Image (tube, rainbow, N blue to C red):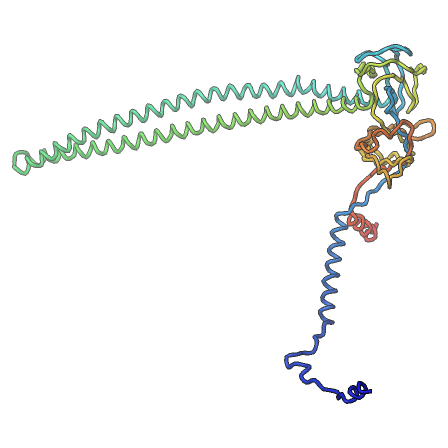
Length: 422
């Protein structure tokens, strides 16, 4: 009861100065918010532009593939039509590196050989005609350079002789002038003493003046002669330097041209070796040779034509690298060429768990097989993650990258198509 009474006795109290004088109402932040949104918008646009320039969207074509190779055997199989001209081995026969196996030909082989022969003809022409003419030019330039070097030596000796002769002449005249000046000074004293006549003094003065003039003339003459000889020496040195530069340029052109032809022929041979292995050229055919030791497990029984993709021979040998075998339709093959990058996705190893394998097109057949498709062979690289997992016969889907353009490039192409009028 007492507690309730005490509570009721309490009176409400008003606290003063809740707000201070320096307190101000809050600012209107709507304008700052608008500016911030504008800045954020500009930043997002810049970020999108940068990303559209960096992020690339590849244009690609897809087709199934079959994994081959990897077995302890060596297979002769080509994606183009070939013709067997001669067989040098039989089933069960052992072969060693360098042994002849088959002699084959075909449109692609003939084309390769013709390209190689053109480079050889070009090389022969270069060595027999171009190189001979250019080397003759170099020899003539070297003879001229030697002759000019002799002129330079002769001119240098003339300059040295001219300088010596000039110095001796000037030195002799200086001594004579000194003696004449002493004689003139003595005659002046004698004239003042009345010993000699004025005419004698004047003759003495004239002799001094004549010798001084002769000395000046001699100095000018030798100066002009030295200037002429030095100009001649400079001209000879310039000619020598120009001829040496010209000779070096001819040698450099010869060396570059020779290397270019050798590189061209070497590239043809390298491409043929990648496609056909070890071989030697015989007329318009290739003599295929073993590049490793092995035993013949199978030899084609065809007497002439071998279809694209058909096996010519199989050898038991060391393990070979894997390769992907693809077949392109007529609509696809026109977009494909050697060196294009390929991404392989194995059906047995989902790519979102195991990843992909990168490959590169090694050859594209110019002849279709029985089904009308064009065989394609690729080489694999960066396949370490699948080491020990891959096996002959695995299938999957390959994505061949035709071109790699950024989002900005694609947008620009779309804009160009929309704004271009025929």
